[in-house]
Image 1 (cartoon, one colour):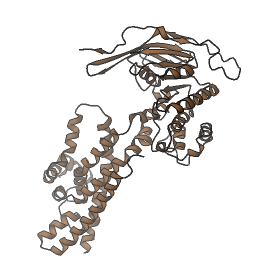
Image 2 (tube, helix red, strand yellow):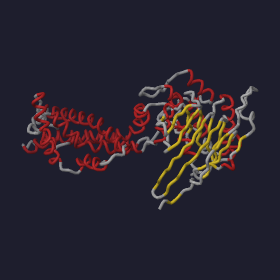
Image 3 (cartoon, one colour):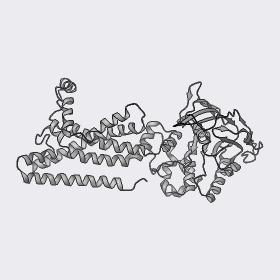
Image 4 (tube, helix red, strand yellow):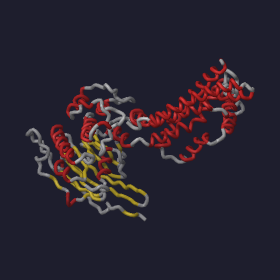
Length: 222
Length: 261
């Protein structure tokens, strides 16, 4: 029982951090894609959307190649700071944030594109600086769409399994998230443990999706 | 000279190209640019505000050069000290009337609070009889109220020039008459120079101390006219007497929509 709560707490922690990371990068990327006109835009967007279609194992393998000790980045981290990411909960955060990333930047992009450019022009003529326009006009008007994406990303990060297992492993109390714990319980024939794990996971996911749906369908506009 | 501009701009959409080529200067307090849609009047007004960058030429507002392609001057809209009232008012839908009106008074990264109190905000809310609506959102307002909010928001920063883009076209006919009179009185009181673009001759009849007609991106010199000096917005008996003179140059036949194929 205690192991289950530990797994739930770890899952929430990993999903929370992954969502926070996706918030920062997803809003930035969504805004750039919505407003920027630069070569290779479509290619960048397609690449960033890949986690939606690639098998999680493929992503996990990419991550191992990129942040593992034998990779340049991994070796540098190890040499410089003595940090090894593989088989840590931080690796699970990286895996979850990448898998959930398209769920944030795509709605963010759509939300930014739906903001009437005339409102930004109005702010411009009123003497407001460009960064202030982003925080005072653009972001508040796009916020609802972004928030719905964030909730979906949180739910997706909570359920992340394949890539997480490959880069973070399944160390009980350390890197074993709910979804990994379910797999382990079934493998070990502990069906009653699996039952409660599955119920908890489903309940949390339903709660998140309900809130996302309410945000999406609720008062649209102002 | 309230404004003096000489600009050229080419817009392309697919195979069609639109050429704007206007030169006009005015020392009338109230100038109306009249023309059908697609004549380039909106583009001209946006160029004055800095929302559209001309390909060539210069723009001077109230004696100050804000754009000069030759000298590489392009003052951002933030620093042109021109107020712009959009055709559909462009009120911030996520902010209350009070926050909209006070918007320009706060320069940081955060919007004025719902309870934002400044003397200037209260003054302009009163001037436009918006006091009882201060906590409403734009979508809860009528067309006339929205226009008042847009004017209050534009005027609070103390602009040197007021640019109005078809200010009455979003209103129904009765309200249009009321709001025209209101703006007329306000302008006479504030004596703020204004440039209005419209396709409605009735607007020109009231506000057109100087009237310029645009057709297909160029000036229609034959129809430019000015009223007698002294008749222009001379309020309170003082000799305001804006010299009602408008000088118009060049009317090349470039202003046609052309198929460049």
